[in-house]
Length: 150
Image 1: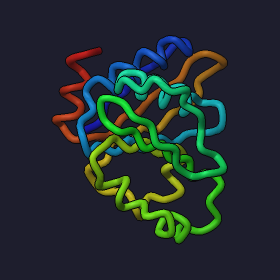
Image 2 (image 1 turned 180 degrees about the vertical axis):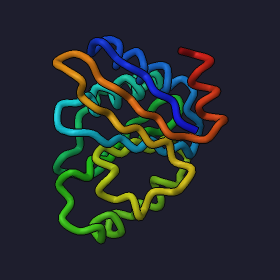
Image 3 (image 1 turned 135 degrees about the vertical axis):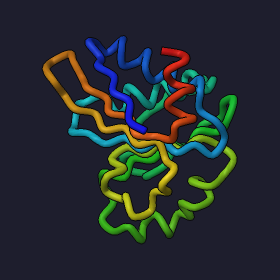
């Protein structure tokens, strides 16, 4: 199923992330794709906030993955700087993707061959300085959960 959301400000993007975070369940994988500066990390931070992560969430650009404790564990990947997909095998990505928490992947389009079909895929498009289009592709169940809180 496909769901579209237009954000008119960074605060609206944060609101979308917070609401999405409230409906995520153990094992959910959120794949974020979009150009630099479209709001991937902003969305990630607000998802983590909704999952009751109290640490400061930063992009794991040099470590590939950061782990946070919250209502559910949050595994935050940034695969922008990986050179080869084998790097994900080396860190045991399967334990994160199929573990007990929520996995959020920035630049997910670079590793789509590893992403399960049931993952939540979000493509972010910059419309202008403040507006973003979020195209969310997910199961009918996830879309209904999200629609209920929006």
